[in-house]
Length: 151
Image 1: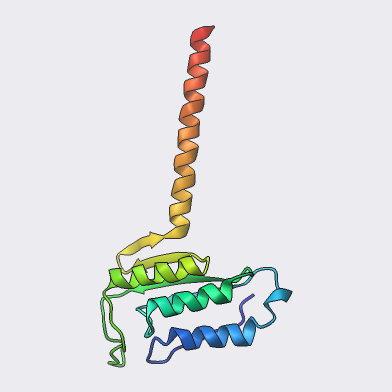
Image 2 (image 1 turned 90 degrees about the vertical axis):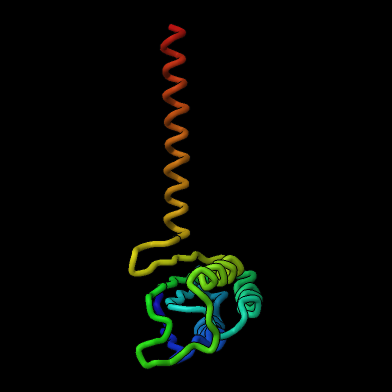
């Protein structure tokens, strides 16, 4: 269910956007089976990471609400209007901050840029499942081979 689109318009005031989303659309969260917030962003929030992490942990506690983040790392550090963000971090520091926030919100983190995908929780899970399947297949092949040798 897509309900709300929030824009910070010239800032990265994530706390304000999260509060609006939670207060407007998720006040009746007990009536819904599963809900998620999807943040599409290009940089670090104006607020400190620990503040946002604590807030999302509190909001997501005891319900199925999750915060998922898609971070796009572009080449420009200033937006098209020439606005410099209130808080700056390089792309790696930004990714680390959002990974911490997402972990506290039981969500998933995806980081991509012009060069492609840098990191994605979904892709990591898929690769892990493929590696497990490959190991299982190797064990099965070894078992079949050992049974052939016995007979």
